[in-house]
Image (cartoon, rainbow, N blue to C red; front, side, top):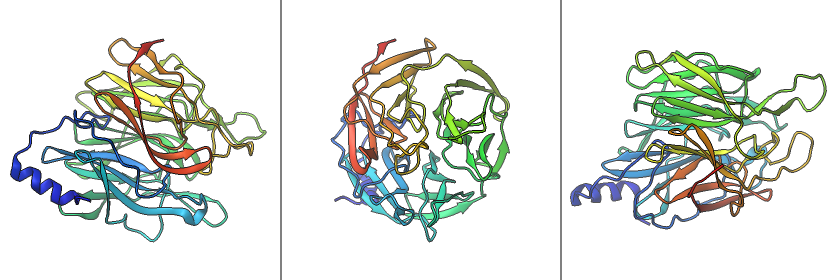
Length: 361
């Protein structure tokens, strides 16, 4: 297996042309077949970084095969997109792993933000730490913590400088905050508060100056159980060009299908679309079990929001091998790619590729 750093140095010496990277983790035009992860992982934090014209995809932490509190891992893997091979890299600092963290690629580095740790009793504690992986020097370092610890959030990057964390789950439950990290100034700022009910486990990202997020879990307004129910709200936010903290929110129509929680998402500026796939109809835990105690089935629908026509589109109503807790889609010129997740209740290492040809709803 070719080490990531050796591949980068080789590409520098050969002067290989740059690959194209869109905000949704666009891969090389040649689209080599991607190997499975080195180990089964679900609900990991996935992002990509473009270094010296070469695209690397990272998978950080997540839940291991046993689906127990001590099966969380702080392992880290990097995929060389030219070869389709994974390499294990230096693990995320810390004594224990986390689940439900966010990841974003900015300035040739991979940022890892928040997530939650699981204790022996099954309790979940949101974490505020932010680590950064430098793929050139192969080392981790810390930057200022999140003002509010958060997990199961929506993450997006604006102008290759600002990292947005939109809502999520914190110590007191779902939150409405938008936390923005300015990579250049190394400081946090607060964005315009989210509209509607606070949610976690929702899906979305940023393309250009537009934030899209959908669904998630919201607090049950009745006094009964379950404590959280699925949200059906979809929102669009426009970031002010002069002030990245100002966001104008408007409500969107409901998307196709019934999946509401932990939908996988990826985007392509070239396509002008944000893609969604998988996830479940009801909120569920890291084992794939709903709050009613029953296993949740993954949705087989793949759909997209077309930013140019401002319409929802159905992509595939019978997506092969749908999964829960993949959370992130890699968007290539021809395909959408899932990495890991829960397959029929089992944590998988599979990398699943599907066609992304759109059919308007």
